[in-house]
Image 1 (cartoon, rainbow, N blue to C red):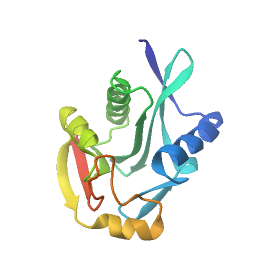
Image 2: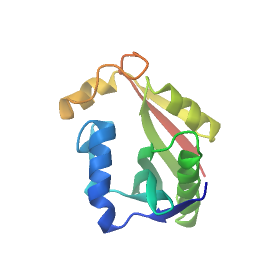
Image 3: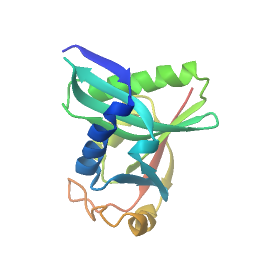
Image 4: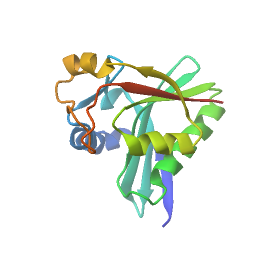
Length: 159
């Protein structure tokens, strides 16, 4: 499988909006009471034979890069890992000192994935989802494994 990674283009925004709506249950993302819309995010797209197979979005504040979304459309083929590798390369080039992200307590696969890639848990934001649901009521009560979605887990990688 030959995957290429490229920067998001303006022409990708429609596809991105649809992906976010399908995968994230709404047209925007909420992390730590911050609303993120696709139109405002930068990122990279993974492609195989000109077909989009992954998306990573982020925002930069000072010398810190927050990963907002990571979507692999073909699991277990290295798409997510390639997108993270690209973000790390990009961050180093831009002299970013910290990459961080939020996931929820129910997302066992993501927790394991980020740990394997060298991210560490910086903080558990207990009961944070209660406040996020006020901004985004479409956040499910339970995750794929039937685990109640309650806390946000902040991971970081110091470069």
